[in-house]
Length: 145
Image 1 (cartoon, rainbow, N blue to C red):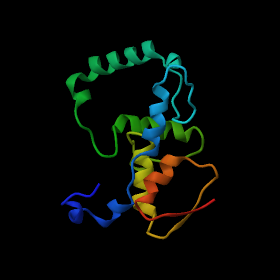
Image 2 (spheres, rainbow, N blue to C red):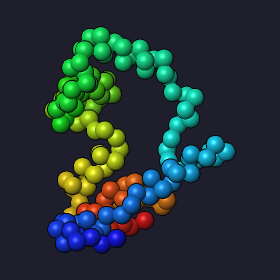
Image 3 (cartoon, one colour):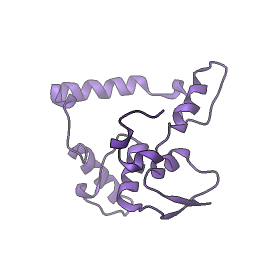
């Protein structure tokens, strides 16, 4: 739908589309459907008690500070732990080499911003993750399967 404000939007917004994943996830709301499309784990395998205990520890230790905004790179103690864990597998990184994202879509978008120029050809599998294609379409990527 066109609006009187469309001419003010960046040209790349013309390549943006509704989320394919959002449309697929609508099917998961039906109780008789087991969908493998959305990458959703079975709810009964979530470790709720362990998660509750971890939240309690964080809130007891850090209080309201745990609920504040953090740095763009992510929580430093977590990045330090990831660096130590990676070293056990021969991957030498520092916390400065690690960025915590809010999910795969944010990570894919950041990768597109940094590495994809309009017209770049990206080699993908067939089938491929639709969320990656959607994240990179706005940067003008072309795909080769």
